[in-house]
Length: 296
Image (cartoon, rainbow, N blue to C red; front, side, top):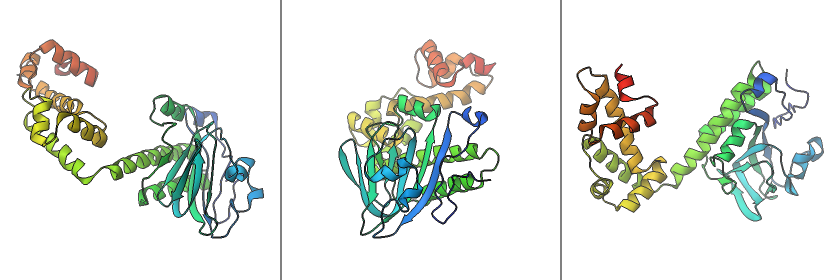
């Protein structure tokens, strides 16, 4: 049954979701989720007095003890965080991080439609520690995208029904939601010619994986300088050209090593590695096992 703190009307506001010791083993918990249409000329949040203080104070300023994602699917408003004022319009998302003061509201004359989900746990804390979630990047522009809205709806369905292990499903949805927001923003930021340059470089690498062609030669055949190729490739793939080229070589090496008549030394040489031992160390670093272990 839904938690007694769940609002069951059309705006689907949910809060104080239950979770068990078993749920906590995941390292992530969904604490609340919702969707609300705020019509024009409506006080925000609607029916303020029915909500917890953390929600009622959102227009004046608040600091949460959990993470929360706010996504605007229609309308516009404003957000203030880190002392900076941001215009919030459809297709923008805000990531509230524990301990970071913020406030937001829709424009009174236009209103907005918002989706949100709250979450916490060691898994998300580690994303801060590893700088996957950054305190300096809290406003995202993934654009209006059906995948994001569908992710929110799936989370809301799980939260509404609260069937066994609903926390697992809701948290899986939160992780997918975060990854979609990150990747869609990154892709939207890339100029069209980035893809063309990256694809050219990948083709050059594939064609020359059995050689020791240099990154300078790869960049030359891609039509850009080495620094520019590094910049574009890293922005588009999150890898440097060198890292990607090594990845290709390691994948080719796996195929060759499976062949019984190919020695480790022969495979290293065929892939352009003059030093067999360097190749073996690199192979183990990338795969977790040595070339000889793979052959066995």
